[in-house]
Amino acid sequence: METIKIKYFSDKIDKLEYIGGKSDWIDLRASEEVSLKKGEFALIPLGVGMKLPQGYEAHVVPRSSTFKNFGVIQTNHMGVIDGSYCGDNDMWRMPVLAVRDTQIHVNDRICQFRIMKNQPAINFDEVERLEETDRGGFGSTGKQ
Image (cartoon, rainbow, N blue to C red; front, side, top):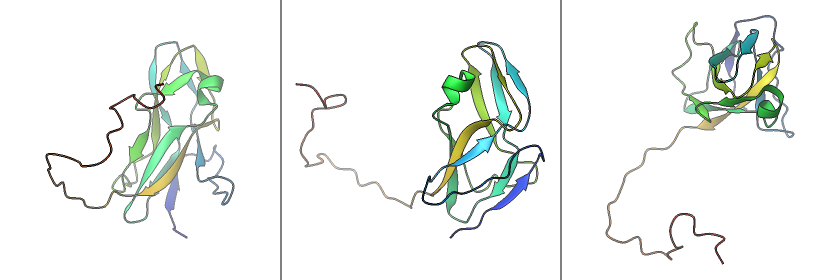
């Protein structure tokens, strides 16, 4: 089991909890009240900073109910937090765009994260042909 050092920037949010066996994703919560009008952008403060284990990064994505409940979309669609983002002022945030007027309250579960191993070192070997079966190009699957 890996250990992650975590700093809470707010005492108003629930502590993070890993529920092994039920989900590989851990919910993150808004640590401040955020009011948005349709079309506005905000960085939702998540109230935590972490020192990830060596060789890992965090992937941050909306929860399945985020759009329905709050009317926001994550502007980068998936946030990647690398292991070097771990200073005392490096609070995690979620960049969002509102598609309707909305209010996000302190402690609302707004997104989720999981940690993933960093990509291994790779080399590229340039070739003229890939010598595998051609699937027909982008978007070709499912065509009758």
